Each structure stands twice: as structure tokens, then as C-alpha cells.
Image (cartoon, rainbow, N blue to C red; front, side):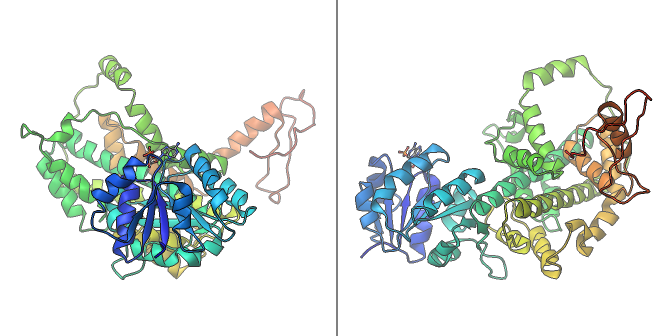
Amino acid sequence: MKADIGVIGLAVMGQNLILNINDKGFTVAVYNRTITKVDRFLNKEAKGRETIRGTYDIQQFCSMLKRPRKIMLMIKAGKAIDDFVEQLLPFLTPGDVIIDGGNSFFGDTIRRTYYLRDKGINFVGTGISGGEEGARHGPSIMPGGEYEAWPLIKDIFQSICAHTPQGQPCCNWVGSDGAGHYVKMVHNGIEYGDMQLISEAYSLMNGLLKLSHSQMADIFDKWNSTELQSYLIEITARIMQHKDNDGKVLLEKILDKAGQKGTGKWTSVNSLDINVPVTLITEAVYARILSSLKAERVKAAGFFETSEFDFTGDVDSFISDIKDALLASKIISYAQGFMLLKAAAKTYSWKLDFGDIALMWREGCIIRSSFLGKINDAFQNNPALESLLFDPYFSTIIKSAQQSWRKVVSTAFNAGISVPAFASALTFFDSYRSAKLPSNLIQAQRDYFGAHTYERTDAPEGQFFHTNWTGTGGDTSAGSYQV
Ligand code: 2AM
């Protein structure tokens, strides 16, 4: 019997996804560049599963598949995808589907979709989140690309993915060409933000309030049954309790240099490209970069020693303030993430369903949380919602958290404890809720030194003026380009 789907790539994610697909009753043909890994997999992880079929060359692999063929690449992003596509093409027929399940850059997915469309092949670029565990037992899956492929893969994808507590699949069609990989990229950016925010809460509880790890574990545990419920809060509580072999807390032995693989950075770079102020994620990316300057930081610590700040307030009430600051900042981060998605839909001509995207992230992925259920509700209630900050659920939280949030940020500033994400969230909030900003001065300066022109409060928008500020600059403007 021919296979329902073929998977190329037998690293952990590939293997786990194959086992997951097979558990759901589908026959899977498998292949890997290094052939020896095929038998190793068949004799170990896939032992006894007759409906997982090993293949040893690309032609054999393609001939084993039901038509139209569905081929999933679970290999390293980048050139390896293009190489495999070229190797597959001679053995494919129009209507076949190639799915890239790696962490590809969405621009590459756009390019590949149109390249393969010309050859009659339906290309799908899909984000998959949830790590190894997710791949094995139900990840969040974000497919985009050639829509014709969706009815062919929908059954498989929606049976292997995670499901919400209400039973909805955390996988739906995201949009055309690079939309799936774009949404996965934003997911990763938001993940950077969430992790940074939680780290700052830890920094305040540990550095300022001098709480023990078991106290912090209890607090994160408690927060996990509030609006902050999320996988990342849950694992943070566990990390706080985890002891090294000598019985000491492992966390404090881990070097404070954060690594990254680049998808958070992609989100920030793209936000600059399409003019969306995604400040919190970007601050989180910078925070990781800054953390990696360990030697310089150690040197600077010696240079700029500050006197110890004694916290004199009520500890329990400050813990509750930190919780409010975390929640308010998280709302800002997601509001920014969805602003980015909205702008991307316009820029790249995607029809994105924001409520659906929140639902895809509700379970299975790293940022999974009940909070995402509320975001889904917000877009269900109003699909045209301008910003999450205008949704009654979120605006009510922000309003009631505001004082605590300000207290936390100002206390951190006074104590000299760095809280880049909390602070950038608050700064964004204060700018966003300002009917008037000092940008009139920037416009005046631009017009003064470069004749860049400005609009006036007492004239219709879109009408540009230039002033001869010095009396010697002349009346010629530099044109009304806006960047
Ligand atoms: P390998 O086992 O032959 O190294 C994760 O690295 C997966 O991507 C593995 O299945 C790996 O195959 C595959 N991979 C990495 N680089 C590749 C490339 N340049 N061409 C094909 N497959 C590649």
C-alpha cells in the first residue's frame, strides 16, 4: 500500500512528527540524506510500525507516495530546502505538494511558492511550534502557501496538531505564500518578549525583594492559575525548583548570556521594514545581545558600582505589583505583535484571520496560554479591532494595572535594576495614549535643516508647508517624502 505522506529529514523534530502522523492512522514513507539514519530510525523509534516505510533514494521515496504526492521536508532551513526541491522535481507530477516544515524565512517561502507554481507543484511553508514534545504529541501548526494544497493536507495536519480545551485544532490555513512562516516568525518574536518579561519579574523578585527560589517557584505557580497562565510561567516555576547534583539551585549556575537563533531578530527587522513599533520584542532581542557582552558587563559593573538599594515597601503588595506590570506589559507586547500582523497582511496581500492565529497559538506552542483564548475572543467579538488595547477585556486590565506598572518601573529605575521590556512597554503605552507628542519639534527641525516640510494643525492633513526659518534658506522644500 502506498503512503499517505512522505517525510524527509530524520532529526528529532522529523522523527517525532512521523510518529505522531503514524499514531493518527496515516502511512508514512520516510527518507533522510544520510541513508543510515533511515534504518536506525526503523529499528529503534519506529520499531514494529509497519505503516512507516523506509526508502533509500529519492525516486523510490516518490514512487511510494499516493498521488497527488504530499512530501514534507523536516530539514535544516536555507539552502538544504532548495537543494531537496531540485532533487525531488524530476520525480513529481503537477498537483503534487511539497511542504517545508522548517523554520524558513518567510521571504524564501514566498520565492519558493512562485518558483514551484510555475512547475505545477503546490508549495506549502508551515510554521511548527512546540519543540520535540509538541512534534510528538501535538504542535501548533501554521501552514501557508498554495491554497490548493490545503484540502489535501488538512486532515493530516488537523489530526496531528494540538487542540484547544474546547477541541478546536491549533492549525488552520494561515494565508498565501509566506504567511505561515511569517506567523511562525511573529510567534517566535512574541516568545522572546514573554521570556524577557518573565526574566525581569524574576530579576526584581530575586535582586530587589531577595526572595528565595522556592518562594519564587510558589509565586510563579500561583500566577499560573491567573490571567498569566501559560506554558512559560509553568516551566519557570519548575526551573526555580530544579536542583543541581549538589542540591543547589541549577539556575544560579547558568551563565547569564542568552543565545538566539535569529527568528526574534527577523521579527524586529521586519517591523522596521514595514513601519510598526514592535518595541518590546525588539528590546527583548537587544536584551539577549547585551547579555552576551558578559566580559564588558563585568568590567562596567566594577566601573559603575551603585550603592545597595534597600527595598522598604510591603513585599507582598510589591509582588502583586510585579504581576500587574508583567500582565500589562504582556498585553502591550501582544498588541504590538498583532499590529505587526495587521500591517503585514496589508503589505504582503494576505487575508489573515487574527482570531484564528490566536487560536493556533492557544495550545501546542511555546507561547501557549489562556491569554491567547482571550485574544481569540477579542477578534471574534470584533474582527476589525484596531488594537487589542481597545478591547474591553484588555483595556480594563491595563487601566487597573497602570499604577502598579508605573511603581514597578520607577522602583526598578531607582534601584538600578534593568527592566528593558517592562519599561519599553510602559513607554509605548504612554506614547500610544498621547494625543499629542513632541514630534512637531522633530518636524520643525527636519524642515529647518533639510527643508523636509511639515503638516500643520490648522490645515488639512496631507498639505505640506515649508518655512524659511533663518531668512537665508530660501523657500524651496526638499519634497514631501515621508520616512
Ligand atoms: P542529515 O541527517 O543527512 O545530516 C536536520 O539537520 C536534518 O536536516 C537532518 O535530517 C539532516 O540530514 C538534514 N540536512 C541538513 N543539512 C542538509 C542539507 N544541506 N541537505 C539535505 N539535508 C540536510
